[in-house]
Length: 76
Image 1 (cartoon, rainbow, N blue to C red):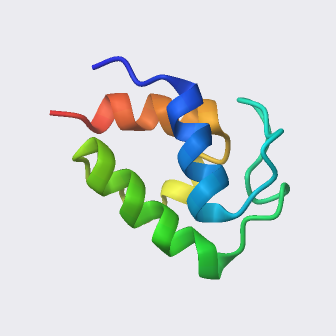
Image 2 (image 1 turned 135 degrees about the vertical axis):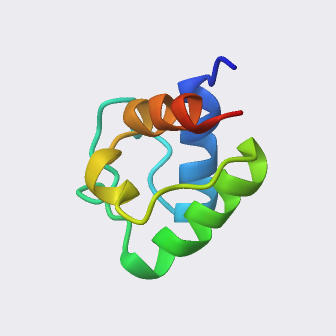
């Protein structure tokens, strides 16, 4: 399953309420993602891509590109 980084960015911007100009290698937490917004983002990504993130996802996937790669790795 090829996950397009642009789709992940769109979800991050919409659900995470981050600036639309976020780039694939920008740290989403440095860009303003808070812990309060991280949980709905997690749920939306899991639902949209039918994956289950590990508890430490925010340590290993802090950029849209890394999130895309993690989703590809976790996808059935």
